[in-house]
Image 1 (cartoon, rainbow, N blue to C red):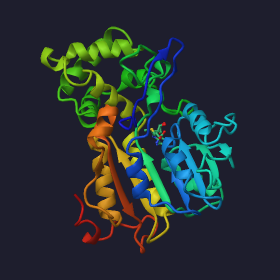
Image 2 (image 1 turned 60 degrees about the horizontal axis):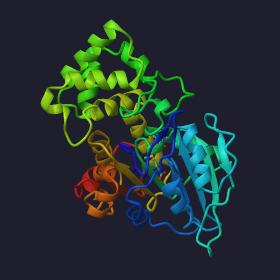
Image 3 (image 1 turned 90 degrees about the horizontal axis):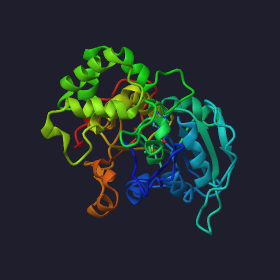
Image 4 (image 1 turned 180 degrees about the horizontal axis):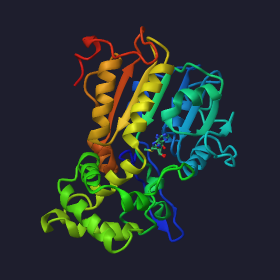
Length: 353
Ligand SMILES: C[S@@+](CC[C@H](N)C(=O)[O-])C[C@H]1O[C@@H](n2cnc3c(N)ncnc32)[C@H](O)[C@@H]1O
Protein backbone atom coordinates (compact mmCIF):
# COMPACT_ATOMS: atom_id res chain seq x y z
CA UNK A 1 0.00 0.00 0.00
CA UNK A 2 1.65 3.10 -0.72
CA UNK A 3 -0.76 2.52 1.41
CA UNK A 4 -0.19 -1.05 1.28
CA UNK A 5 -0.84 -1.21 4.98
CA UNK A 6 1.33 -4.08 5.66
CA UNK A 7 2.07 -7.55 4.64
CA UNK A 8 1.83 -10.74 6.51
CA UNK A 9 2.71 -14.07 4.96
CA UNK A 10 2.25 -13.89 1.24
CA UNK A 11 2.19 -16.23 -1.66
CA UNK A 12 0.26 -16.38 -4.86
CA UNK A 13 -1.43 -19.59 -5.77
CA UNK A 14 -1.07 -19.87 -9.55
CA UNK A 15 -4.69 -18.88 -10.25
CA UNK A 16 -3.98 -15.43 -8.99
CA UNK A 17 -5.66 -15.75 -5.60
CA UNK A 18 -3.64 -14.47 -2.70
CA UNK A 19 -3.01 -16.29 0.53
CA UNK A 20 -1.66 -13.16 2.14
CA UNK A 21 -2.73 -11.47 5.29
CA UNK A 22 -3.23 -7.75 5.47
CA UNK A 23 -1.91 -6.47 8.78
CA UNK A 24 -3.20 -2.98 9.57
CA UNK A 25 -0.45 -0.40 10.13
CA UNK A 26 -0.30 1.94 13.11
CA UNK A 27 -3.34 0.29 14.64
CA UNK A 28 -2.90 1.27 18.32
CA UNK A 29 -1.86 4.75 17.22
CA UNK A 30 -4.91 5.06 14.97
CA UNK A 31 -7.19 4.02 17.82
CA UNK A 32 -5.61 6.57 20.13
CA UNK A 33 -5.97 9.38 17.59
CA UNK A 34 -9.53 8.46 16.59
CA UNK A 35 -10.74 8.87 20.21
CA UNK A 36 -13.78 6.70 19.57
CA UNK A 37 -16.77 6.52 21.87
CA UNK A 38 -19.99 4.47 21.87
CA UNK A 39 -22.67 5.89 19.61
CA UNK A 40 -20.34 7.54 17.13
CA UNK A 41 -20.79 7.43 13.35
CA UNK A 42 -17.48 6.44 11.74
CA UNK A 43 -16.59 6.28 8.05
CA UNK A 44 -13.65 4.06 7.16
CA UNK A 45 -13.10 5.29 3.60
CA UNK A 46 -10.56 2.58 2.78
CA UNK A 47 -12.01 -0.38 4.63
CA UNK A 48 -9.81 -2.90 2.75
CA UNK A 49 -9.61 -6.19 4.62
CA UNK A 50 -11.32 -4.60 7.59
CA UNK A 51 -8.36 -4.63 9.97
CA UNK A 52 -8.76 -1.09 11.25
CA UNK A 53 -12.55 -1.17 10.86
CA UNK A 54 -12.87 -4.24 13.07
CA UNK A 55 -11.06 -2.48 15.89
CA UNK A 56 -13.17 0.66 15.37
CA UNK A 57 -16.41 -1.31 15.38
CA UNK A 58 -15.53 -2.89 18.71
CA UNK A 59 -15.60 0.57 20.30
CA UNK A 60 -18.85 1.95 18.92
CA UNK A 61 -21.47 0.01 20.88
CA UNK A 62 -24.98 -0.84 19.70
CA UNK A 63 -25.86 2.79 19.00
CA UNK A 64 -22.82 3.36 16.80
CA UNK A 65 -22.58 3.14 13.01
CA UNK A 66 -19.59 2.09 10.93
CA UNK A 67 -19.70 2.84 7.20
CA UNK A 68 -16.92 1.09 5.30
CA UNK A 69 -16.11 2.18 1.74
CA UNK A 70 -13.78 0.56 -0.74
CA UNK A 71 -13.55 1.05 -4.46
CA UNK A 72 -12.37 -2.52 -4.91
CA UNK A 73 -15.30 -4.91 -4.92
CA UNK A 74 -13.02 -7.92 -4.55
CA UNK A 75 -11.51 -6.54 -1.34
CA UNK A 76 -14.92 -5.90 0.21
CA UNK A 77 -15.42 -9.64 0.46
CA UNK A 78 -12.54 -9.71 2.94
CA UNK A 79 -13.98 -6.75 4.85
CA UNK A 80 -17.27 -8.56 5.15
CA UNK A 81 -15.55 -11.64 6.53
CA UNK A 82 -13.58 -9.57 9.04
CA UNK A 83 -16.62 -7.64 10.15
CA UNK A 84 -18.90 -10.53 10.73
CA UNK A 85 -19.26 -12.60 7.56
CA UNK A 86 -22.20 -10.75 6.03
CA UNK A 87 -23.33 -11.69 2.53
CA UNK A 88 -20.80 -10.76 -0.10
CA UNK A 89 -23.08 -10.88 -3.09
CA UNK A 90 -23.75 -7.19 -3.63
CA UNK A 91 -20.50 -5.57 -4.54
CA UNK A 92 -21.66 -3.45 -7.45
CA UNK A 93 -20.83 0.23 -7.82
CA UNK A 94 -22.28 2.19 -4.96
CA UNK A 95 -24.19 -0.81 -3.68
CA UNK A 96 -24.66 -1.88 -0.11
CA UNK A 97 -22.44 -4.87 0.33
CA UNK A 98 -23.38 -5.65 3.89
CA UNK A 99 -25.70 -3.97 6.25
CA UNK A 100 -26.39 -4.59 9.88
CA UNK A 101 -23.87 -7.38 10.15
CA UNK A 102 -22.46 -8.10 13.56
CA UNK A 103 -18.93 -6.84 14.12
CA UNK A 104 -16.66 -8.81 16.37
CA UNK A 105 -16.65 -6.68 19.47
CA UNK A 106 -15.30 -7.26 22.93
CA UNK A 107 -17.52 -9.76 24.73
CA UNK A 108 -19.23 -7.05 26.71
CA UNK A 109 -19.87 -4.57 23.86
CA UNK A 110 -22.82 -4.98 21.56
CA UNK A 111 -22.11 -4.56 17.84
CA UNK A 112 -22.78 -1.33 15.99
CA UNK A 113 -24.68 -1.10 12.72
CA UNK A 114 -22.21 -1.81 9.92
CA UNK A 115 -22.68 -0.82 6.29
CA UNK A 116 -20.15 -1.71 3.58
CA UNK A 117 -20.28 0.07 0.24
CA UNK A 118 -18.46 -0.42 -3.02
CA UNK A 119 -17.55 3.20 -3.61
CA UNK A 120 -14.73 5.69 -3.68
CA UNK A 121 -14.14 7.87 -0.65
CA UNK A 122 -14.13 10.72 -3.17
CA UNK A 123 -17.93 10.36 -3.01
CA UNK A 124 -18.12 10.22 0.79
CA UNK A 125 -20.95 12.74 1.06
CA UNK A 126 -23.22 10.89 -1.37
CA UNK A 127 -22.35 7.54 0.19
CA UNK A 128 -23.21 8.74 3.68
CA UNK A 129 -26.44 10.23 2.37
CA UNK A 130 -27.34 6.95 0.71
CA UNK A 131 -27.40 5.25 4.10
CA UNK A 132 -29.55 8.03 5.54
CA UNK A 133 -26.83 10.03 7.28
CA UNK A 134 -25.52 13.54 6.70
CA UNK A 135 -23.04 13.93 9.56
CA UNK A 136 -20.34 11.70 10.98
CA UNK A 137 -17.91 11.87 13.90
CA UNK A 138 -14.84 10.31 12.35
CA UNK A 139 -13.39 9.74 8.89
CA UNK A 140 -10.44 7.39 8.52
CA UNK A 141 -8.34 6.89 5.38
CA UNK A 142 -5.52 4.36 5.08
CA UNK A 143 -4.34 5.17 1.57
CA UNK A 144 -3.07 3.08 -1.31
CA UNK A 145 -3.51 -0.60 -2.02
CA UNK A 146 -3.62 -3.56 0.32
CA UNK A 147 -1.40 -6.62 0.47
CA UNK A 148 -4.30 -8.65 -0.85
CA UNK A 149 -4.36 -6.60 -4.04
CA UNK A 150 -0.58 -6.53 -4.42
CA UNK A 151 -0.30 -10.26 -3.93
CA UNK A 152 -2.93 -11.25 -6.47
CA UNK A 153 -1.05 -11.57 -9.75
CA UNK A 154 -4.22 -11.32 -11.84
CA UNK A 155 -4.77 -7.76 -10.55
CA UNK A 156 -1.54 -6.65 -12.20
CA UNK A 157 -0.14 -4.53 -9.36
CA UNK A 158 2.99 -6.56 -8.78
CA UNK A 159 6.39 -6.60 -10.42
CA UNK A 160 7.17 -9.72 -8.38
CA UNK A 161 4.53 -11.88 -10.02
CA UNK A 162 3.80 -11.81 -13.70
CA UNK A 163 0.22 -10.94 -14.57
CA UNK A 164 -1.90 -8.83 -16.90
CA UNK A 165 -0.93 -5.15 -16.71
CA UNK A 166 -4.15 -3.98 -15.07
CA UNK A 167 -3.66 -2.07 -11.76
CA UNK A 168 -7.24 -0.77 -11.61
CA UNK A 169 -8.65 -0.84 -8.10
CA UNK A 170 -12.18 -0.52 -9.44
CA UNK A 171 -12.45 -2.90 -12.35
CA UNK A 172 -16.08 -2.03 -13.01
CA UNK A 173 -15.36 1.68 -13.49
CA UNK A 174 -14.74 3.16 -16.88
CA UNK A 175 -11.02 3.73 -16.39
CA UNK A 176 -8.16 2.47 -18.56
CA UNK A 177 -6.00 -0.36 -17.34
CA UNK A 178 -2.28 0.27 -16.93
CA UNK A 179 -1.71 -1.43 -20.29
CA UNK A 180 -4.16 0.94 -21.99
CA UNK A 181 -2.77 3.97 -20.18
CA UNK A 182 0.80 3.11 -21.16
CA UNK A 183 -0.24 2.60 -24.77
CA UNK A 184 -1.34 6.20 -25.22
CA UNK A 185 0.17 8.38 -22.47
CA UNK A 186 2.29 11.25 -23.78
CA UNK A 187 6.00 10.76 -23.11
CA UNK A 188 6.29 14.00 -21.11
CA UNK A 189 3.26 13.10 -18.97
CA UNK A 190 4.73 9.65 -18.38
CA UNK A 191 8.05 11.12 -17.32
CA UNK A 192 6.39 13.60 -14.96
CA UNK A 193 4.22 10.87 -13.43
CA UNK A 194 7.22 8.65 -12.83
CA UNK A 195 9.07 11.50 -11.16
CA UNK A 196 6.22 13.07 -9.16
CA UNK A 197 4.19 10.02 -8.19
CA UNK A 198 6.98 7.47 -7.94
CA UNK A 199 9.91 9.65 -6.97
CA UNK A 200 11.84 7.90 -9.75
CA UNK A 201 15.14 9.74 -10.14
CA UNK A 202 15.69 8.23 -13.56
CA UNK A 203 12.23 9.12 -14.82
CA UNK A 204 13.49 10.38 -18.18
CA UNK A 205 15.35 7.16 -18.97
CA UNK A 206 12.49 4.95 -17.80
CA UNK A 207 9.90 6.94 -19.79
CA UNK A 208 12.06 6.79 -22.91
CA UNK A 209 12.51 3.03 -22.52
CA UNK A 210 8.76 2.50 -22.11
CA UNK A 211 8.01 4.61 -25.18
CA UNK A 212 10.63 2.71 -27.15
CA UNK A 213 9.30 -0.67 -25.98
CA UNK A 214 5.67 0.15 -26.81
CA UNK A 215 6.70 1.13 -30.35
CA UNK A 216 7.92 -2.41 -30.87
CA UNK A 217 5.11 -4.28 -29.09
CA UNK A 218 2.28 -3.41 -26.69
CA UNK A 219 3.17 -3.77 -23.01
CA UNK A 220 0.58 -6.16 -21.63
CA UNK A 221 2.25 -8.03 -18.73
CA UNK A 222 3.69 -6.84 -15.43
CA UNK A 223 6.81 -8.95 -15.98
CA UNK A 224 7.40 -7.30 -19.33
CA UNK A 225 7.08 -3.80 -17.82
CA UNK A 226 9.34 -4.67 -14.87
CA UNK A 227 11.95 -5.86 -17.34
CA UNK A 228 11.81 -2.67 -19.39
CA UNK A 229 12.06 -0.50 -16.26
CA UNK A 230 14.98 -2.38 -14.72
CA UNK A 231 16.97 -2.38 -17.98
CA UNK A 232 16.41 1.35 -18.36
CA UNK A 233 18.10 2.09 -15.04
CA UNK A 234 21.85 2.60 -14.72
CA UNK A 235 23.42 -0.60 -13.33
CA UNK A 236 24.05 0.95 -9.91
CA UNK A 237 20.38 1.82 -9.51
CA UNK A 238 19.25 -1.74 -10.20
CA UNK A 239 20.13 -3.16 -6.81
CA UNK A 240 18.85 -1.10 -3.92
CA UNK A 241 16.94 -1.75 -0.71
CA UNK A 242 13.74 -1.95 -2.73
CA UNK A 243 13.09 -3.62 -6.08
CA UNK A 244 14.22 -1.39 -8.94
CA UNK A 245 10.72 -1.30 -10.47
CA UNK A 246 8.95 -0.29 -7.23
CA UNK A 247 8.83 3.44 -7.95
CA UNK A 248 7.67 3.12 -11.54
CA UNK A 249 4.94 0.62 -10.65
CA UNK A 250 3.73 2.87 -7.83
CA UNK A 251 3.65 5.89 -10.14
CA UNK A 252 1.72 4.09 -12.87
CA UNK A 253 -0.76 2.67 -10.34
CA UNK A 254 -1.33 6.11 -8.82
CA UNK A 255 -1.86 7.65 -12.25
CA UNK A 256 -4.22 4.89 -13.48
CA UNK A 257 -6.39 5.22 -10.35
CA UNK A 258 -6.12 9.02 -10.14
CA UNK A 259 -5.20 8.54 -6.50
CA UNK A 260 -4.22 12.14 -5.78
CA UNK A 261 -7.39 13.52 -7.42
CA UNK A 262 -9.55 11.14 -5.38
CA UNK A 263 -7.64 12.09 -2.24
CA UNK A 264 -8.25 15.80 -2.75
CA UNK A 265 -11.98 15.20 -3.37
CA UNK A 266 -12.18 12.84 -0.42
CA UNK A 267 -10.62 15.33 1.99
CA UNK A 268 -12.99 18.07 0.84
CA UNK A 269 -15.99 15.76 1.15
CA UNK A 270 -14.92 14.52 4.57
CA UNK A 271 -14.76 18.03 5.93
CA UNK A 272 -18.27 18.74 4.68
CA UNK A 273 -19.75 15.74 6.53
CA UNK A 274 -17.70 15.79 9.73
CA UNK A 275 -19.37 17.17 12.84
CA UNK A 276 -18.28 20.78 13.30
CA UNK A 277 -15.95 21.37 16.18
CA UNK A 278 -15.39 17.73 17.16
CA UNK A 279 -15.30 15.59 13.99
CA UNK A 280 -11.90 14.04 13.32
CA UNK A 281 -10.27 13.28 9.98
CA UNK A 282 -7.43 10.75 10.35
CA UNK A 283 -5.28 9.79 7.38
CA UNK A 284 -2.39 7.35 6.93
CA UNK A 285 -0.18 8.15 3.95
CA UNK A 286 2.66 6.12 2.47
CA UNK A 287 4.03 8.45 -0.12
CA UNK A 288 5.40 11.97 -0.12
CA UNK A 289 3.03 13.30 -2.80
CA UNK A 290 -0.09 12.18 -0.93
CA UNK A 291 1.40 13.19 2.42
CA UNK A 292 2.03 16.73 1.13
CA UNK A 293 -1.63 17.02 0.11
CA UNK A 294 -2.90 15.73 3.45
CA UNK A 295 -0.49 17.81 5.51
CA UNK A 296 -1.40 20.99 3.69
CA UNK A 297 -5.14 20.31 3.74
CA UNK A 298 -5.21 19.59 7.47
CA UNK A 299 -3.01 22.57 8.25
CA UNK A 300 -5.13 25.00 6.26
CA UNK A 301 -8.61 23.63 6.88
CA UNK A 302 -8.67 21.96 10.29
CA UNK A 303 -7.39 22.29 13.83
CA UNK A 304 -4.43 20.02 14.46
CA UNK A 305 -4.49 18.04 17.71
CA UNK A 306 -0.76 17.32 17.34
CA UNK A 307 2.12 18.77 15.35
CA UNK A 308 4.17 15.99 13.85
CA UNK A 309 2.88 12.98 11.92
CA UNK A 310 2.89 9.73 13.88
CA UNK A 311 5.24 7.11 12.46
CA UNK A 312 5.65 3.42 13.18
CA UNK A 313 8.09 2.39 15.89
CA UNK A 314 11.13 0.19 15.29
CA UNK A 315 9.25 -2.88 16.39
CA UNK A 316 6.43 -2.48 13.89
CA UNK A 317 8.90 -1.60 11.11
CA UNK A 318 10.88 -4.74 11.86
CA UNK A 319 7.79 -6.91 11.77
CA UNK A 320 6.38 -5.10 8.77
CA UNK A 321 8.81 -3.23 6.50
CA UNK A 322 5.97 -1.44 4.72
CA UNK A 323 5.12 0.43 7.91
CA UNK A 324 8.39 2.34 7.48
CA UNK A 325 6.82 4.88 5.16
CA UNK A 326 3.49 5.19 7.01
CA UNK A 327 2.54 8.59 8.46
CA UNK A 328 -0.60 9.19 10.45
CA UNK A 329 -2.05 12.71 10.54
CA UNK A 330 -5.23 14.04 12.06
CA UNK A 331 -7.32 17.22 11.93
CA UNK A 332 -10.44 18.36 13.79
CA UNK A 333 -13.23 19.96 11.76
CA UNK A 334 -13.47 23.61 12.75
CA UNK A 335 -16.66 25.02 14.25
CA UNK A 336 -17.18 27.52 11.50
CA UNK A 337 -16.50 25.25 8.53
CA UNK A 338 -19.05 25.71 5.78
CA UNK A 339 -19.25 23.43 2.76
CA UNK A 340 -16.96 24.46 -0.06
CA UNK A 341 -15.67 27.49 1.79
CA UNK A 342 -12.26 28.95 1.12
CA UNK A 343 -9.50 27.92 3.52
CA UNK A 344 -9.63 29.94 6.74
CA UNK A 345 -6.71 32.27 7.39
CA UNK A 346 -3.48 31.31 9.10
CA UNK A 347 -4.74 30.39 12.59
CA UNK A 348 -4.84 26.66 11.90
CA UNK A 349 -1.71 26.58 9.84
CA UNK A 350 0.93 27.75 12.18
CA UNK A 351 1.37 24.66 14.28
CA UNK A 352 1.86 22.21 11.43
CA UNK A 353 5.07 20.29 11.13
C1 LIG B 1 -4.11 0.13 2.73
S1 LIG B 1 -5.56 -0.62 2.24
C2 LIG B 1 -6.60 -0.40 3.65
C3 LIG B 1 -6.44 -1.49 4.65
C4 LIG B 1 -7.41 -1.42 5.80
N1 LIG B 1 -7.20 -0.26 6.62
C5 LIG B 1 -7.29 -2.68 6.63
O1 LIG B 1 -6.92 -2.59 7.81
O2 LIG B 1 -7.55 -3.77 6.12
C6 LIG B 1 -6.23 0.56 1.18
C7 LIG B 1 -7.59 0.20 0.63
O3 LIG B 1 -8.15 1.41 0.13
C8 LIG B 1 -8.83 1.14 -1.05
N2 LIG B 1 -8.88 2.41 -1.77
C9 LIG B 1 -7.88 3.09 -2.36
N3 LIG B 1 -8.32 4.23 -2.88
C10 LIG B 1 -9.65 4.29 -2.60
C11 LIG B 1 -10.68 5.24 -2.86
N4 LIG B 1 -10.45 6.36 -3.57
N5 LIG B 1 -11.91 4.99 -2.39
C12 LIG B 1 -12.18 3.84 -1.70
N6 LIG B 1 -11.26 2.91 -1.44
C13 LIG B 1 -10.00 3.13 -1.89
C14 LIG B 1 -8.04 0.05 -1.72
O4 LIG B 1 -8.84 -0.65 -2.61
C15 LIG B 1 -7.58 -0.77 -0.53
O5 LIG B 1 -8.47 -1.81 -0.27
